[in-house]
Length: 163
Ligand SMILES: [Zn+2]
Image (tube, rainbow, N blue to C red):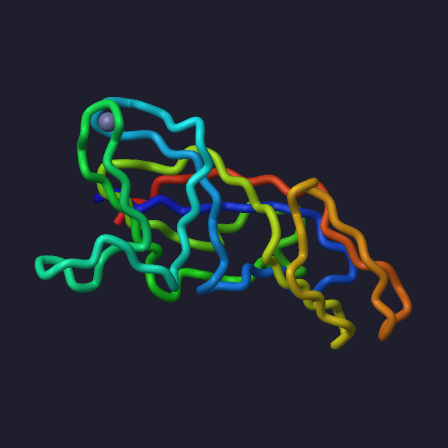
């Protein structure tokens, strides 16, 4: 089993914190099979509140399960409980791990942020739900603080985490 962390970086303007709407946020990823090296062209979603492939042998199931179409290996991924953390004003401009995946037989290689993010403005300003980061930039107007809030230059990468 390999642990893989999703790191994000962004420049935050007048924002206290940016976070996913976990545990219901779907992380859209592209995956590579560790056995045969097959990379999926399709985006797959991994959601902590969802469980698949539950049976008598594995009553808990998995957050994600896939049989590799090349080598037929049965692979799965779980989001590590409580590994979700917000990206805060102090992190602005730096890479930070915001979630960790337990990977069995496959690894995420690409991430698509899409929508479902939450933004909390500085100084208890307005908060925004279902923020869409698919353009890598997002700007809104905070009517409580009378200033603009923004997420700029969103970027991401995966890192292997040593235990
Ligand atoms: Zn495979």
